[in-house]
Each structure stands twice: as structure tokens, then as C-alpha cells.
Length: 182
Image (cartoon, rainbow, N blue to C red; front, top):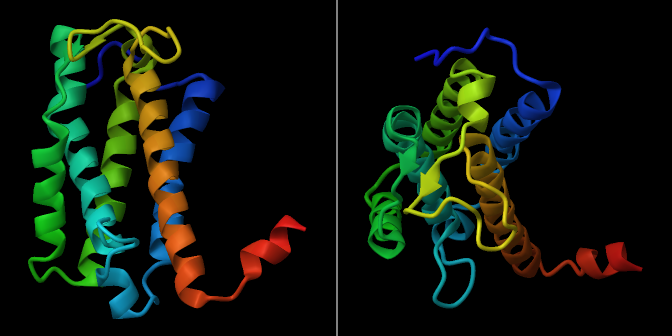
């Protein structure tokens, strides 16, 4: 799958991929949480922690199987309709998959994706691509590339990580967050 890379990435791109991989350590830390907290919604009308981890795993799988290959072959990525795509991940989380299985699936898929990103080389990571027909991010004006989209997924991870941490803080009722803000 090497697209002309020499196996060496810039320290900046390697740091982005390493940061993307690092969520696996945080997710591993969820293994000891009570089942009710794992499978219940993080807030009214929101997904469960299990659903969120399935959602992250499903997006990683989409990047591996579809988005990155399309970026390499066509310089174009088409993302699926989010609601139906996400609904399938949430349904999978409710299908009977266990917490250890789901955490391991996330870990293996994320690390596979990071190895893929490392293997395609610097030029392929930074080559301009379109995302759903758009060449630049509407929020930043930055041209889309595989590495830029990886950074967007890091932000996506952080959004879900914050939501999970806030829910866990509320369920623990510890007031610890208030103490940290003083």
C-alpha cells in the first residue's frame, strides 16, 4: 500500500498519528467501569459509552477500508450519511458484544489504521483530496488531505472523550471537577 513513501514521516505527521493512536490507552482504562455505566446513555437522548466506542471503531474501519484507499486512488473521499452510519454502530453495541471485546476491537482497529497511515508515506498523507466534493475545510480554509482528516478525527475523538468523562463525573457525583477548577 506504499504510495511512494520512503517509510519515514516528518516528526509533525508522526506526532499526529501517535496522538491518534494514543486514544487506545484511554479506552483501555474504561474496562473496569460498571456495566450499567458502560451500557447506559451518557445523557438523555445520547449514546452509551459502549455505543460511542463502537461508533469510533466503525469510523476507523471506514477509513481503513474506504476513505484512505479512495484518497490514494481517486484523491476523493466520500463519507456516508452520518445518522444511518452511526445508528449501525449503536445497534452493534447493543447486539451482545461484551465490553472487553468492544475495547479490543477498538484497539486493534485503531492501531491497524495508524499502521496504514504510516505506511502510505508523507506525500500521500499530504496530497490534496476532496471530502464529499469539497477541497477545503469550511471552518478553517485548510485544504483537505489524509493527514488533515486524521486531525479532524482526533478532534472527533476528543469530543466523545469529553462527553464520556463528563458523564462519568456526573455519575460519580464526586464534585472533583469543581475542585480542579479552583
